[in-house]
Length: 112
Image 1 (cartoon, rainbow, N blue to C red):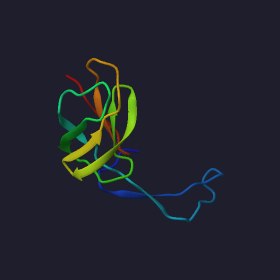
Image 2 (image 1 turned 90 degrees about the vertical axis):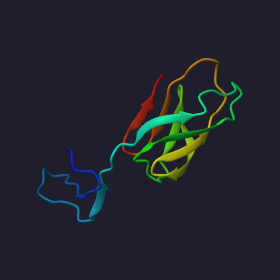
Image 3 (image 1 turned 135 degrees about the horizontal axis):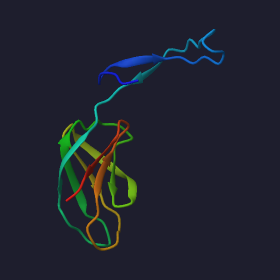
């Protein structure tokens, strides 16, 4: 269910309609969605290799933080701060493509 960001809930499981519950005490944490505001540079080689810097807000230093260029997703990123990350773009066909940022919480897209 929806819940405030930054808070966690204990998750337990029942296999018999709530008669008995697990007692492991696993936590589920809610996170705010990262906001993508600007990407530089705005163009690069079709052979890839350009280093993109993505800026915005709410970027968390997690293993799941990654970039998306066109249809290519889960491109490794380097967290710089809560407002910036970078990634090296792969080779891609010529033309404009949507850019995105992925984290555990959700995807953020940027379109021209």
